[in-house]
Image (cartoon, rainbow, N blue to C red; front, side, top):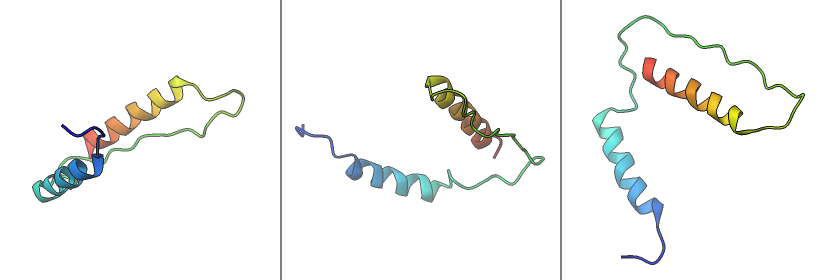
Length: 65
C-alpha cells in the first residue's frame, strides 16, 4: 500500500468509466425541472447550514436532470 494517497490516479480511471457509461448525460425524459436559489444573506457569517442547503439543491437538480 502506498504511503500517500494519489487521488488523480484513481479519479482519472473512474471518470473515464463514468463518461463512457453515460452517467453525466441527461436522460431527456420527463418535464422540465426548475429550482430557485436565493442570493446569499450577508447579515451573518457562513456556517454548515449554507453548505447543507447547497448540497440538497445540487442533489435535487442532479436527480431531476
